[in-house]
Amino acid sequence: MTGQRGNTGSLGDRTSPGNTASLRPDELEAVYAISKVVSVAEDIDTAMDEITALTRAVFIFDSAVLYRLQDGPEPLEPAFARVVGRGRSAPADLAWGERAAREALESGQMYRYETDPKPDADRLDQHFYLSLPMIAAGRTIGVLVFIRFGGPSYTEEQVNLAQFIATHVSQLFERQLLVERVANLEAERRLARLQDEFIAMVSHELLTPLGFIKGYTTTLLRKDTAWDEKTLSEFLNIIDEETDRLSELIENLLDSSRLQSGTLRIDLKPVRLSDLLGDILSRTQTRYNGLILTADLHAADLTVHVDAKRIGQVFDNLIANAVKYAAGASLSLSARRAGEAAVVCLRDDGPGIAPEHLPNLFKRFYRVPERSAGVRGTGLGLFICERIIETHGGEISVQSQPGEGTEFIIRLPLGDALPEVSEEGHV
Ligand code: ADP
Image (cartoon, rainbow, N blue to C red):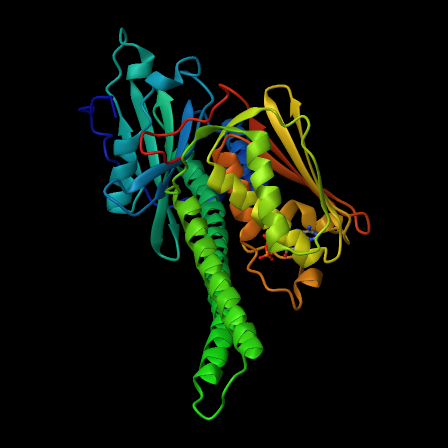
């Protein structure tokens, strides 16, 4: 507060609570209109704007500030402030009545402060504060401060009116606090439910391959049976595949948490797009025997600055998804240049995805409910793909129609349009 504490008798004055009998008809009407605003208010800012306008019609003030009580070293935080009279052209230089607000907070009662009027002083340096605690259920929840620059003094009738207004604003504020509390509780409950669901899903996903590994190992260790070569090899293959699946799951979980915390390392190097996609193609052909994957890489003679391992991981994931969710479908991979970007598309002619799921597809843990039954997954794959592409300064999108297949489109910047990477290589 920049004003000087005056030395006349009206400082720190406290008056009794308001009384309607003393209100003029226009003031009563304003108080009634304010109570209506409070009863239908949806957000505090709009309601306070309306209350400020209604108040200003019957009560002169230059600015009004609403402080809310908060935890921490500075107990009052401005929740709303409006300059409606003097000082509108220079709000940054104005006094906002923090000290007057603290006085009302500490005493729990209205506090009035008036600078000694000096005829030649700047009006903006002469502060007339009316600071009213807002009380709900016997507890101070904030303070409403009215400020006049250069006077006049608040009359007893005006103080009475201001108290009515403060009572209504308290109700508005209390409702807002209740709404926030309910929203916080709901958010906490949602978070707890999500954590439970996450633990259940991850445990299930980890236990399934572990169950296979344990079962086949125990079987192989049985002393009472001799396994022929073919069965032995079949069982060992299952153990091998399930171990890969387990490490892939753990890698996904770790990547997802590194991406959330911004600690995933990417190592950008200039790479020929045709080489990168060629590697992906040959890896896919070895991995998925019989999969039809055509490629049009003629326009792929481009250089991209990427972490080849991470981009490979993105395509491996998209192809694994096509194998899981578009079983038996043919895939096609194409690459072209579009301005300063390389655009790579992976299409399948599988069952497609219903439009209502598309906006959620890249969200962490999102799975299309009707497609997830019996198909193993965590809903992390596309989330990781999107974040990896974004850390390269690129974009991934999806186009799909039920019955017409799915296409994932990846744009990666070419040449010098590189993302900013810190010295350690973290994005
Ligand atoms: P996950 O495979 O672990 O469920 P993803 O994040 O990789 O998680 O995929 C999210 C969802 O997107 C999948 O559950 C699946 O329903 C859907 N999906 C992904 N790719 C395809 C595709 N090619 N065709 C149809 N649905 C797909």
